[in-house]
Structures are given as C-alpha cells and as structure tokens.
Image 1 (cartoon, helix red, strand yellow):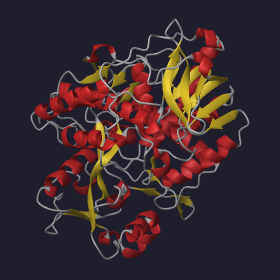
Image 2 (image 1 turned 90 degrees about the horizontal axis):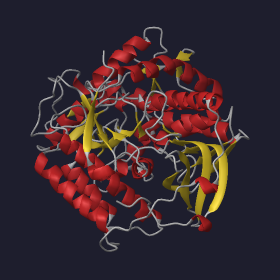
Image 3 (image 1 turned 90 degrees about the vertical axis):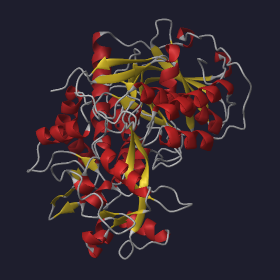
Image 4 (image 1 turned 180 degrees about the vertical axis):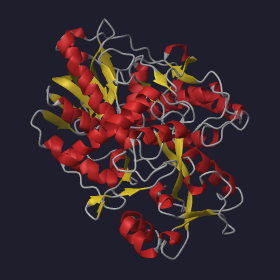
Amino acid sequence: MRRYLVPWRAEECRIYSTGVLVLGSGIAGLYTALKASEYFEVTVLTKKGIPESNTKHAQGGIAVALDQEDSPSLHYEDTLYAGAGLCESDSVRVLVEDGPLRVEELIRMGAHFDRKNGKLAFTQEAAHSRRRILHANGDATGEEIERTLIAQALGEERILVKEEQFLLDLLKNQKGEVIGVLSLNGKTQELEIYLAQAVVLATGGLGQLYCYTTNPEVATGDGMAAAYRAGAQLMDMEFVQFHPTALFIPGAPRFLISEAVRGEGAHLLNVRGERFMEDISGKELAPRDVVAREIWREQAKGEVYLDFRPIGLEKVKQRFPMIYQTCLDYGINVLEDRLPVAPAAHYMMGGVRTDEMGRTSLPNLYASGECACNGVHGANRLASNSLLDGLVFGGRIVEDIVNTARSKGLMDPQLSDIHTEKDESCPGYLRNQLKRVELQELMWEYVGIIREEEGLKKAIKLIGDWDRTFIPEREIAQLELKNLLAIGHCVARAALAREESRGGHYRWDYPETHTKDLKHSIQTKEGYNVCTIPVSRVD
C-alpha cells in the first residue's frame, strides 16, 4: 500500500508552523480551535470555504438534557439503547454530563435557539424518551451553530483560518509522533507543510462513499484515510448510519427530511396509504436503523411517503420552514401532498479510534467529531447526538493538550524532524477512467443497508483491484476518490468480518445479534487484517 497519497519532496513545499493544527471547520473543528486559542496559536485548515461542512446541513438539532423534566441519566440510557450494545459507557457519560455545560457555553457565544414563552423549546426525535432536542430557526440548527462558531473564530486573533486546503497526509518523526501534515493548496496547487505541537482531525464523515447520501460533496473521508495511511487504528468501520427519510425524487439530491418531522407527528405511509410502522416498537420513532430497514422492505412493493398533515398545517410552516420551501421548490406542497422518501447514507459511527480525551493510537494526533470513534455512538447513533459529540470531545482534546504541555512540555517540530518513509508506487497502471459513481453504486448495492457474504466479497475484491491500479494525479477529485477507495475497502472488510446484525450493520445471512462477547472491530493498514477488542466499559 502506498504510504503517501502523492509523491513529494520537502524542498518543493512551503513550510508553516503553529501551536495546534486543526483540520476541519465544522462544529468539532471550530470549537476545538476556539478552546485551544486560549493557550496556543492555532491554525485551522479547511477543505473548501469555512462554512462548508456537515454541521451547516444539520437540521434537527442538538440533543442535551437541559429541560427540567430531563436528566443526563435519561439521556445516557437512551444513547446506550440506540447504540445496540456497542457503546462505551464512559464515553457516553462524558457526553451527557458535559453536554449541558458545553451547550450553555455555545449560547453565551451567541447561538440563538428557538424559544417558547421565553424558555428554550425542545422537540422529540427517534429513540429519545424526552423532548430534549434544541433547534434554531425551525430546522436550520446546524447553520445557526456554524454561524456562531465562525463569527467567534474569525474574531479571535490567535486563530488563523486557511481555506481551500486539501489534507494529503500526516507527517511523523522518527519516533512515530505526528508533527504536522502535508496539504495541497487548492488555489495555487502548491504543496504545503504545516508543523504543529498537536494535530486535531475534525474532517467529518464519508457520505460520498454512497450514491445516495444526505452529506455535502466535501464528505469524502479524507481524515480517516490519512490517519489510516499513517498507521492509526480505525474502529467499527462497518457501522454506517442510513437516515430513513431523505427526499426521493428522480434527479433530485437526497435532501434530508429531519427526524424532528416524525417527532412532531408525521406518519410514514406505504404505497397503499397504510402506516406500516404501526406494529413496530416505537413506530415512526423507532431507532434509525429499524426505520430505514422497514422503509427498504416497503420499497420493494412501491413508494414510501411521509405525511406531514398530522403535524398541523400552520405548525409545519413555522417549525420546518426550510424543509417546506425546499420541497415546494421541487414541486411538492407538503401541506397538501405526501412526500416520497427513501433512506440515504447519513453518518459514520466508526472512524479513527480515540479514547475519552480524543487521543488516537498515534502520539500527538487527536480526532473529534464524525471522523473519530470513541464508542459514544455504538452501532447506531442516537438522533442529534452528533453535534453534541463535536462540542464535548473537542473541549476534552484541548484539556489533554494543555495537560500534556504542562507535564511533559511540547516542542516545536522542525522540518528536519520529518521522517520521510519510502513512497512505494502501486503496481498496475494509471486508470483515470475510474469514476466516483462506480464506487458509490458498488457500495450502495453490496455494502449498504442490507449486506451478505457474497456481495461483500465481491465489493472487497473490486475495490481492492481499483485501489491498486488507480494512482491519482494532483487533482482534488482524483485524490478524494483515492481516499474513498481506501475507506470503502475498510468498511467492506469490517462488514464481512462481523457475522451478526447489530445497529446500522445488517447481514441477511446473519440476522441474529450476538448477546455475548461484544466486540469492536479494529483495523490498521498492516496486512488488511480485521481484529477485534472487547467492549470494555458496558454497564
């Protein structure tokens, strides 16, 4: 396997230094940068413009136990239930107990969440036992949070934000410590090296691995792929969450229809107009993996619809203005017509393995948000826990960096510290005709909502062949495709190795869930092996 995404020499690169380097400008990246700027000079590299991230597109809200009828303990239990036995309970406790303080801090920064009679307004979402979802401007929560954090970050003189920076690889020293990154400047096409005392991956998910996704174009798993090439451990890569309800109109993108729509009372109907979730525990508010599979099965008989009318016509326009207008733009008035919906790839529960402080298996490298996996989401993320995840663990990363600096001291790395490993070219030929859609369709068919051995083996072989024979040039679309090939291979291998069905991973040839010896899957680049470790902290 190639060590580097593209061949390079230090003498052809521009060199920059910073205290803490953050990769990504969503909630995890910007919040981490803001906390780190209290102690260090911080540089934030972002792949496109600073607002472009999964955070911006989040509709439903942020889950937090702030209501007087709620509690962190209830939030804890709901998260464990949704996680289908694979949550790390210590991580979940950190999430639910630190969450209220972090969200209150976000409010003090200027985030305006919707209120009713002067008090914070909470909505209901799937698998939550209480109304605990804060929202902003109806269904534009992520946009409001992103606006708030961008304003804070751009106003902080100790934070430098550099846009159009594509992460190529992590750089290490002779000791194996991460000391910086190699980046491609999308504006100048020049290679740049950023050296730092600590590096934080907050690069988001991998939704673009699938042909149907709610994720933006930037979600190509770049941080996970770079960490994997550098030798970091990846964990639970088989667990991809497919959101049950995305707009399903030929030729239109799979626009997300928030979980909160069902939380406010919308019904799922089959082609005969029947509520097919009636006999399922939780009905429309069952965990996402359950609802997605039921919709998948119903689609074999005909289209599936979401009926907004039980919510109340006036409330729809007030509570879901963006969804209402977007559907109207596609010719559907949800106040009068049923909306066709279908599942789409939405969130990655797996990622770069971390502990409760955000530390990865590589010294000086941290990860937070969707690119990270600390076990907080288990096998199936509880709705609206993702934004909270980025806040809580971003803050803990900075705590650890500061404590490390105080106890051990952090040295500014130098260019001479970089250990340049041999960049072995892959055998084969440059296959420029490979298109992203070929990989996306393969993943959707064989490594999607329903999986089985024969299809997974076919996907593993094809992706492996493509990866070996596709050598990217310095063009971002090709570099993204190379990353998707590496990460797609990891997802498929982990899915083949897990011979059970659990949460977002469903095998029709192994439909049962094992009740003993719960395991996380762990992968590294060495030998393409999939090994397992026990779930170590489960109540």
